[in-house]
Length: 209
Image (cartoon, rainbow, N blue to C red; front, side, top):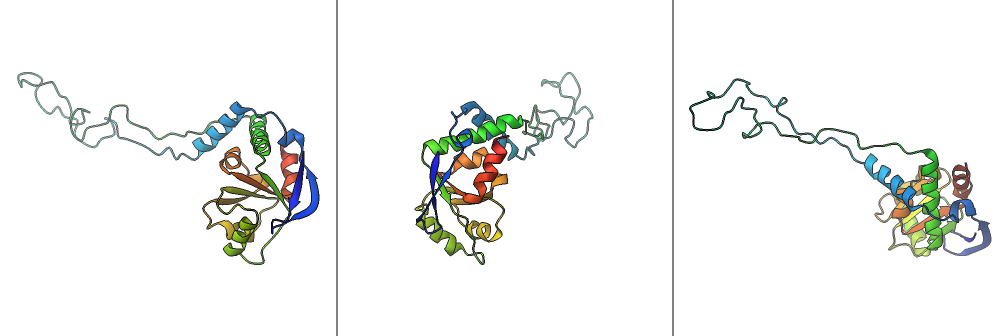
């Protein structure tokens, strides 16, 4: 699969790169994508929800009234869930929502996500660029040149680039990650995927194992 290389002004450089069919041209595995996205979202959950049960509520355990003769139901403790201030029955407990997936399945999911974007023609290959200092206006100019200013975009760098990252941090619809930080969720959550040239080799090397 071939792709044109653009510069950060959105102009064709006249160069063409080959995108590996084993990464960008496979038949997407929807179930692998589902599992990887599910794991990513599950890992974002804190799981700190908690309600006190009967044994955890502060209060006396003495019997609050006699067993018989009151004309009302029996009651043994002020911690009874039926009373105000009592414990919660089967309330939420703190837990971790994370679960494990095989590395091969996660690689398949990312390759499927790349292939989906490639089939939709939503991948742009951009030559490497940098800013002398962090500057949001410069990054906005890159988005405008690529006609992405009103779209959700994901820029994938070969290595971490502090100036480019800081330039994009204030923009709600744009995200910048290094090729080693990529996730299936991030790929699919963006309308357009912008791959810098230096990231291609790393991506294909990591996903071809």
